[in-house]
Figure 1 (cartoon, one colour):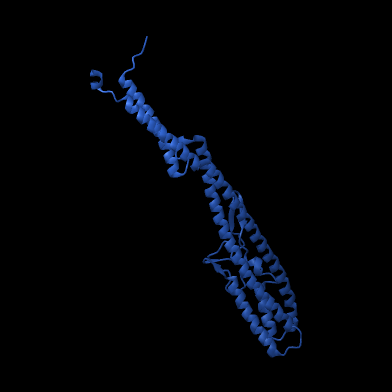
Figure 2: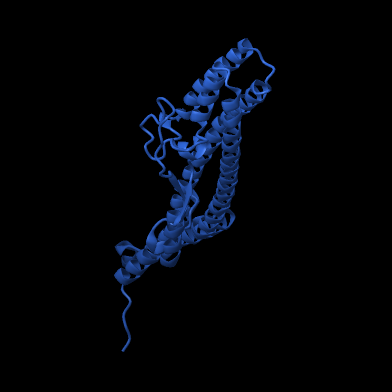
Length: 295
């Protein structure tokens, strides 16, 4: 049994084909205008899964990089302050060596005592240093002044920054680690004040005993400063790794989502030709009217 093909059937089939060709052309126009080959999940269901994963990892990586930038600034600032503390300690050591020689008149010892007092005040100011309104040597109690007289102990808690999933880096050193516990015999503030008093009283014997304590604190301080330097190097390495990871993820995301512009243009031109051809042939198919049949 033969099937009669009516004009309506031909017209409907023609419209379906034209619509299909138009959609194909529009797809490449959209890819060209957005620069992406995946603009909606139906474009590539598997690819969109990877794309969303890469976007999520890039977002997390960006936050880790911000953490490392903040950590680097904090550690570098801390190292700068510790450098100034080191200068004060070196000067205190020079004055102590000069003062315990036994050949200084009391006027010279008084001058040394006065300068020791100035160094104590300098160290007190450095011990209360702030960055962005937060005290750097008071552990997690960054809103509280760590030192008022120099005889206090500070909070011992670490401030940790996350550099990767499950990886944290402590960025701070506490005042107790830098200056010593309030009960330590080589507490920096106690030693400087004691040397100031000893020279003021002309007590060189006491000054000599405190000179040993000063050297003990300097050794501990230098070890702590070395740890800050090592921490800075670790942060630099983590920052470099995060930047490399960001480049890799961006490249993977680009391969998954971005359109090949040269290829897209060629395909768009091809689809435009197909669409124009379908319109041209369609015009010929639907051209006959009732008058054409009556002729």
